[in-house]
Image (cartoon, rainbow, N blue to C red):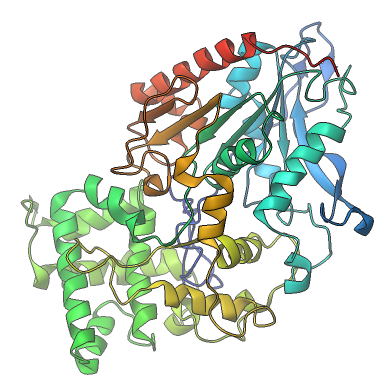
Length: 511
């Protein structure tokens, strides 16, 4: 199976992959970076010692908002009211497509959530997304169970929680929307969810902050690699382009012998299918914004102590150097102890446990379901005439086929995700609402699905401001990133100004 990771800590690449993750849809998965925060003694403004922020609370969430008679399940959440004073806002966030246990940093002032809470005397809450972690309506992740995993159900979860939950803090039964201002925060997919919720549930949340929000769902998302191409060293991109063009030329000529020689140079001669080999090469790019990516470019561009010019060293050296990097470094990173390249990188053996594991807390499976049905985001090769650092062998059908691998009971043929319907329903790039703050990073591979996409040119609007940093994916959500990058600090400072201004306008409902 293939190494693929939906990258947020820029690309969420989180260390050596086991040999159980195929290089497919999850490539570049866009979830938030997980950063656990150790327990510490925290107190309220009046000095009362509060529960540790790792304390788990449970909310009886509806299994199906269209059919409440199906009952409820226990949805996990975490909260921190160390800065709270009566009248302050309730700041809600879901980390999106992953367990929330290691995301408690987002209820502390090490995050933009906590900075807002500290400034505005608010409470910060982290709620786990349905079907991720242990917030599951059912005890399995079969297609039948996952039928109630949709964007709309996730939005309805946020509404039901806000309107129904009695929070375990003093006065927590009297802070519903209308009694207190609620702010919705998210990053990446959950940033998109924040935007979609404001569109779908007008008036529920007074304000929102959406970081790297992938608001426009796109099936053929070849532009994932555009920011990487723009910001990586030109000599490195030149040589990667040369290798990719060579592979695609061999494929077009049906030169199976040449392809086999190329695979063997990378130590991947046992990978049976050429699309899986192309996907393996692509996986090198998912290390963007990591030290491993720097090592890759150094391996390609530093020869005998000399750094190549913008044109690189050329095809022959690029094949040798990239192949050597795969053999000596990247294979172990991708496959760990798995010695069988086909078992690690192949995507055609549907008996592998990756495709059949239906146990809960399997974030890959839940995310596949959402991608296959509604979002797409297949990171593929570009159209002809555009620079290609990813093989054009990789097209959406490569990922759609793997939807059938994962969910044969649901899909008898490769499915078409409902991207047009989602964009029409929730606004996509056309979003235009009040008190929604967008924060994006210019170096973010997901940038082209955000409101900062090239050529979109959304108008500057103080009621829906769009700020851009020189950062990567959701860089603006953690306070530590502003220390090294003043452009991130500027985004955070702007957000705090807007939140203060918007919250000053809020008045309780008379209902």
